Image 1: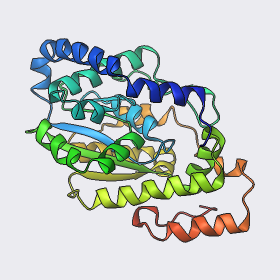
Image 2: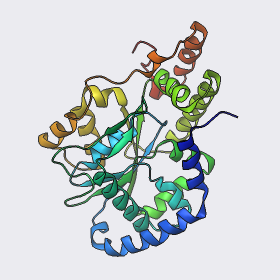
Image 3: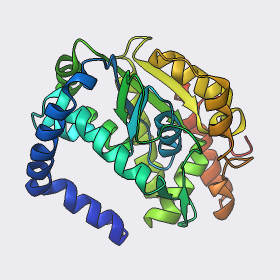
Length: 292
């Protein structure tokens, strides 16, 4: 069995306990009643797909800064859909979590283990004006839940109607994802390689079930290097406009270049060849290689 960090073990324990679900149920029931008028104006529910450590949290934080969008980070919304919560309960949880995370400056552990703030200055994180989109940026668990129970996608579509259900898939260089799994998750290359591409296979199968208006793909590298373009695409996909002030504020918190976790691993030629060989099997990984 692969070793896991103490934080990973704690998260797994919390996700498995019925006490968390029971507490969230009461919290969301109160929230859905309090926010009934606001929730009536929400037109889209936005969830994320992909791999852990691919940049979903930063994309979620940037979208959460938009006045018409609330995106919580790693609520694991599908867990509560599966538990029978109403759409308004799940959306209320995202509002509650987003507000709390904004209060704490949207802090998040980075690729190197340090804690960073994803707070966007002078924007709308944790708050809103004319709210139209609510969602959650949990990605890896969403893929696992949808792959494990194929009926969950249709049940979620049904639950959120008449709102649209939309997904954002943020991709990242596979060498960086695999390296991060080794560095942060304590996995061997073999374990990380198998886990990463098993998730890619699940993503490919899920993609076939989405229409054009249901799935948007963004590259983590593009979000960092050309944020205005990436965020404008995401906002248009979600049906809201992105003005220059919002785009500039979001760009101001980003590093000039993406993190290259792959540089922290000593790769053998055979390992690089194996990753390159599998990249070609997935359309959404097209163009990635060790040097890109």
